[in-house]
Image 1 (cartoon, rainbow, N blue to C red):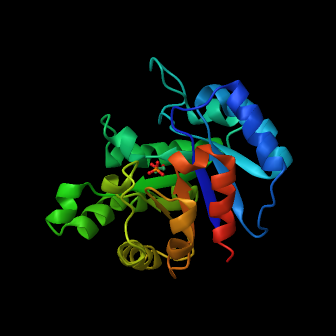
Image 2 (cartoon, rainbow, N blue to C red):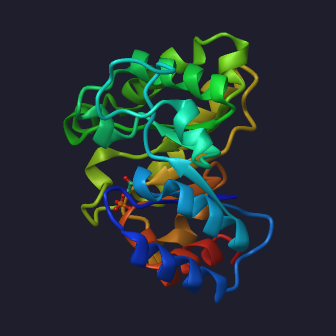
Length: 243
Ligand code: 13P
């Protein structure tokens, strides 16, 4: 099980200190990996503080290039030096700013170059779902990544299915709907020998719906936004995975 916290553009040093103090005081299920994706300004501190509580830090985004004239961006090497072991790639909030499937594939190549694991996010918007095109759309997002040659593809650490209509809306996908998409992703991955890759669900995951989602056969973890900002709620989600 992979249980991941995406803080998005939330948190400062005081928040981080309280968060990891809170984490240290709670009981965490074993046989789970816990990831935290803080804002870049907190990455180094999160990597340090996370070590003490068994949480691994990752970057919310990376640029494909190693360096260059890319104002405001961070390379895979830079976030790795700051302590990141993972990077979110192609989160819908980044795709909404213009990141394409090919950009996401290039980011995975960069992650591989810097020794990071990539957590590639996919997910359809409401219009696509209502047109009945969700599965084709999501598998299409994955295609550019799966087309990469072996060294880059080896850096693919997990896929997160995050339907855009369920992010931050309180409108979670039903466990059955999420399972159906995860099954389709699994089949596509199995076809290229990657059937064992963890598949996470994201989109309004809360302590009270985590158990139903995580008990689906093809849901191997969750990527949590809003509820991950409350360490007690995030811990309850992690514990729900073991129930
Ligand atoms: P919410 O859990 O706030 O819906 O966010 C989901 C998400 O985008 C995690 O990456």
